[in-house]
Length: 270
Picture 1: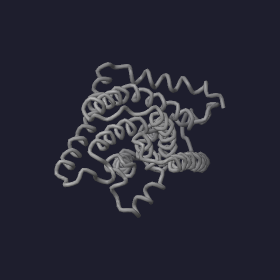
Picture 2: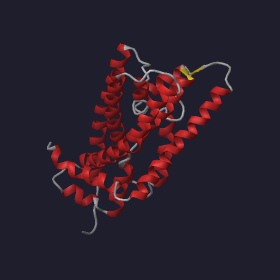
Picture 3: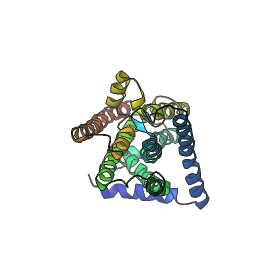
Picture 4: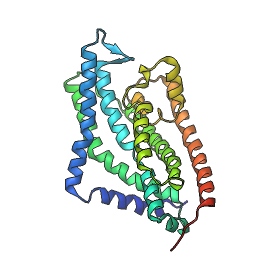
């Protein structure tokens, strides 16, 4: 597979996101708003608690968790189901099928452009600000290079898991005429299952084990816990293996669904 063929998809999507300065600054402002709401909510919870540790997190660790979760979900939460829905409704999926390119790879390349945009604005600025806040206000040491590299590697895998999972979900666009409501339900469920709203360590032991083996925890919870240094040496190898397994399984399942869908696809007009 020649990856250079798909770079224009990434480049065009990146340019599209940067096209309007007003939209750029508004996105930065609105996307940070939810993180600060979560921050003040958790600070109120810790302030009313009689113990300094909740769910295995100290107050300072929870501050880091909140903003690193925001950064991770902001990057790894890019949806390609919306692209599929638009292609199906507008009929442009027919053109994608006759082009000498892999449809799924073209969608992933487009999503990668949006991920790059979200990494540099506003995620990178929030990340730098968080590290400064850690040192100057929380009086914690700066995050080690090892944990940063582990986080970035896990983030790449979490992005792949998110995109491949969303591709499988997007196949529903071929069998339904209304994806907006389904997308809303998916986003709400994902925020819960990925640990974005509540860390998975806050759930009962049985639910923790179930959630951790589902692909959702590997999208947000796992990279952030690696960044916080919550995993030991053996656990680090295990969580990376789990992420890789989910990448392979979701890729295979997406290929199966795509073959089944295209066999029954009928395009009228042209």
